[in-house]
Image (cartoon, rainbow, N blue to C red; front, side, top):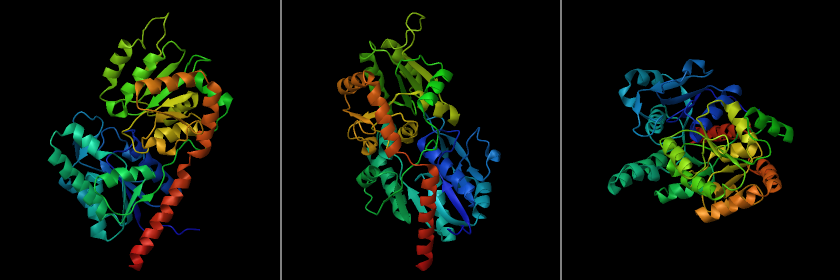
Length: 398
């Protein structure tokens, strides 16, 4: 039996549910699993309007923040201007800190790690250069910001990545240190799945029986290659299907407009919409039902490093059609646990058309996805705690 930690485990990130992205969900699942295993854990984030921190069974420390322009609901943290937060967090006896961001949360974790002499783990999740280049037209400024990110990861005691291909991104930024792969889990890994459960989920969602259900889950931003999805759908609109978009983002209204222009939303009784925009869904059980009801996840993103949605869908036996060569494709074996297509409208739509004609293949590959790319957060959390213990031990030996 592993010993319990003497001090606090601190998880630091730029957001937390109800903000729903892969990193916030990762932090939430780890924190909850640590708490249930009897560990002292806390979460440290920029202040989030609407977050009911008092409902959490473990502490959630928040510091001053302001909205990020054009990226609602994300916020820019200002921890060093928040004196009350600084006094509060400095009194917490940490044993190890885990930063899931190199920005305000990560730099706060780094400062505390130095002050208290405890180890710092830093996980690299996102393609930050892509974000910077879209927002900042000056190459020198972008390079400077990337250098600061690399410096942050070089200060960490260990750098983790959710899958091997993610490390290539960090290497391209100029990082030369060691990296450890620690996979993400799925909270739906232990959920019951049968044909009857699938049909019941479709009934509850009022989906048309016998018609293939396609799905996208994630931020509604063009960076996720959503335009390719809509254009591909327009080329197969002669076939029966129903497409669900779950999420929200700055591009949502333009996506709805494009879907209408492509003839995917007719808004008539005679021609029901082939595409439906469901908005952001915060009820995780409802999201599980949506994954269960779907036949195929469309996720051609080149922007994502190791998207949780592919694993979440796989847990409910829904395979994904992803772009060949993307980071997402690292865990996909074509027609074994998912499907691959080139990043072109012609190839993606052609592959989609063939899959819509082969429901048995979709079902079989969905079973393969559930068997090969899904791990429970309980397993992941125990692996993470073991790695924490090793790092703490090595710090004491040195």
